[in-house]
Image (tube, rainbow, N blue to C red):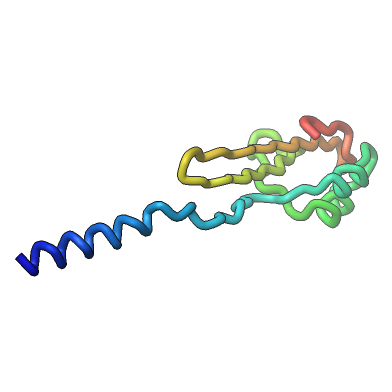
Length: 105
């Protein structure tokens, strides 16, 4: 009888911990994080080295389109209820080493 009461009390006290809200989870960013300030400084006519200095190395340089650089990043917000993510793809196109087009800023 004492064992049953002890097990019941332990089960009730352990299940009470599940009533607490889940801990805060920091958003995890993967890839190149591009800020609004960096986008404001990015201009058509910049050289490849200027773009690399401003944004860092691109995440993807296409083998078949070497003049096309991709800066990708994903921010994931994980909560117990939902899993949200925000994906951004900034594509830069160069001709003869000069930035000519900015897609998806």
